[in-house]
Image (cartoon, rainbow, N blue to C red; front, top):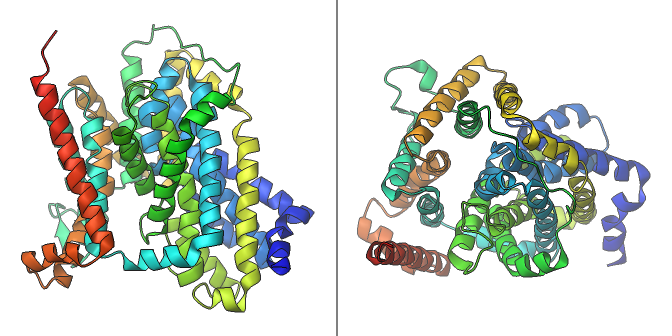
Length: 499
């Protein structure tokens, strides 16, 4: 135990490691705030710079960038309605309406504090329950991933605006767009119409930036004469009463983030969407209706996506299996440094495990410090005149999209989806369900087909599989309950008297 504490505190007492963690967290926040500059890309670039370093400084810098980058996407999501990363899509749903009310400072303050709390929940799970959570992650079958994707797709109901039919149409369109390209199972072209440019699929990050960013800029250009919205930034740190009120939701959402983050191939994107949907169903008296600036709509996804950081480290360190794209890159870094993530890591190099836990905790503290600074400067963006703000959004969208793969083709995709999203908004369609379908569609497709293969293509065997595992049975029960609740609400709304 004394050795574990010493390894845990190593980056806290070593000035160079302390500085690298702080630098990484600061850089991650502002990299994540720029649309298109993903954390995965930043970590991959860092590895090319740090492969000659000692392992501890390299991991300290990477952990800082990872922690800060996951949170950073919330800033552009709140201020500009452009999620800096897919994990911030759910944050934009209520964060941007809060900014439209002049409460951008409060929204960012809530996002920061709840992200830190969620991050510590994930770190605590990594330190105390990594083996148990890894066992659960290994027991999750393809049919369970299918149910998780279906649960996430139920979020279409809350993203549909005034028309559920339009929302379902947009969600289905997103699923189809997400399936464009080579089949994951057979490598056969799908929906490519003989065009080689579509074989790699449609870049959903470029589509996300177009749907949220460019379409928003075009909408604002329709009324450039509207006065800017003055933001209240006199009190950024949320009051104690708000923290106490949102703490139960934060802990529930963080638990979702840890578990979903530990599932290989999911990560903070899915965790944030599921946490948002769970909050929408469980919170009885939100501060505002969800989708119209509810504080709970910021708290839930931000808690979950930062808790997913600690969750993603669990299978990486204990099983050698990445929890998300970033930890897949970090595994490569560990191998470069001669380490072997997996079951023998805890035995052969226990110091690395406790150093990682301590480093993530330190990065989380720096996240609180840096996350609560610079907010007044950032909120000036939301106060800019629309004639200046719309071109700025367009420039950021182009730069961020081009930076993904240094591809002009991605920029054309982004502009095309931006124009398409503008016309969708013009005719009362919401763009959120389209992006949601693009994210969840491939997961649903691959999970369903793997599940059917394991059931020998027998539908009865596939359904019977839900009774063979407590995980499958529990998830199926949650899905049935969610569908029943949605049906009941729709029926009750239809029967409600018109005033």
